[in-house]
Length: 283
Image (cartoon, rainbow, N blue to C red; front, side, top):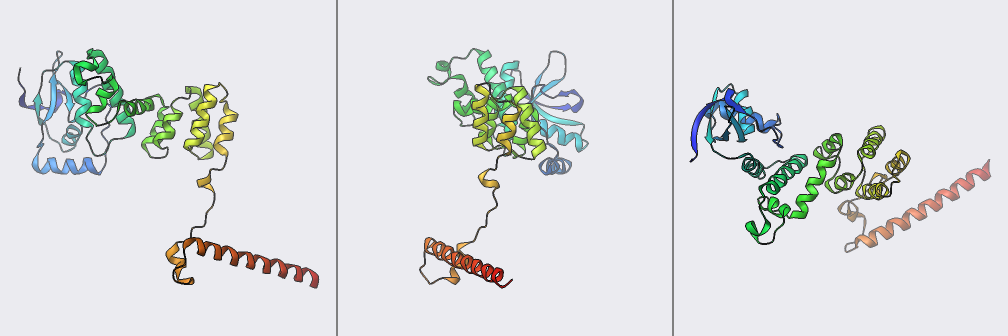
């Protein structure tokens, strides 16, 4: 059966139950609402008919949300016959090229598609040479199978820690290391992060993963690692070369400038000490 474009009442459209992509109420969605109010829904949704009646959305969850906000009663949609596994793959691939995809969205999207590819029974040789299932999943997004698996590791994170990854509070590489901690270890880490208002560096995350593998990551070990001073948390004074250059002869290198500054500071410190000695002698 070929695709058909129909005008479908919103009441007959149902979101895909396992949709890994979030519909966020942000400026982008509001801009879409304004556009729909002015021009209507220009790009049809892609849906598949359900045996129970109505249609399941494969692509267009954000357009549907915008249309609902705009007060639109019906939307154009491409009605496409497909089984559930094919629908999952189409759902994931249709959203992978969006400009803004959260780490959690990509993680659950890759996991969903990997399970679908394995369930399909598609062997690597049938698709593209000798690629493994994870490589097949990454083809649409031009990512390696290893990177796909790394993203999928994020689904092992405590939801609150994963939210920190989405919020940019924890970087991708440390998050991968933390995904290997047990649920209880992650809960203890979350408690420490909240009480100390700190997030782990890559080095700290790697150490916690090693201790976890050895069965030695208890609350005390987590607290000790998390409360140590990180290099980037030490107070620093930064002087721009362009700001300092007017105080030095033309042609001085940054190294010469640093040496001169350190010598001047040493002389100043010595004078301070001599002054303190004279002050004590005068008392």
